[in-house]
Length: 129
Image 1 (cartoon, helix red, strand yellow):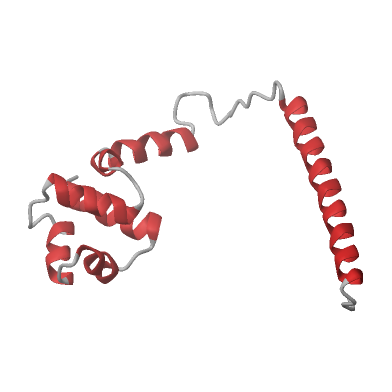
Image 2 (cartoon, one colour):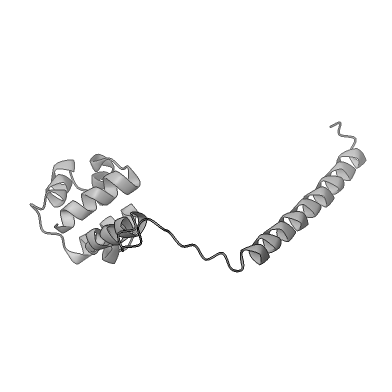
């Protein structure tokens, strides 16, 4: 695949942007942008950087998109000979859950204190709530 194909797939599949939106951001006509995606116009490194910024990725991501997509597809579909068994390392999961739980409890306590302070301020200023 060529760069234009990669740009089009990222724009359509990952970002769901219209061609006209990207063209507008690049300050070019939709036809000129279509020429980039259709591999008719050559893409300069500067233009590739602009497109990457609009798509929220890097130029390298655009250039290696097909390889990344293939690696992702193979990982998801588990095509490495283990008959569909996905191994997940759960070591440390309990300690992570405990940390998250403790942080959640701290956040709840902090919000309760904040609410109490706000209620005091409202009462002091004779504001009904």
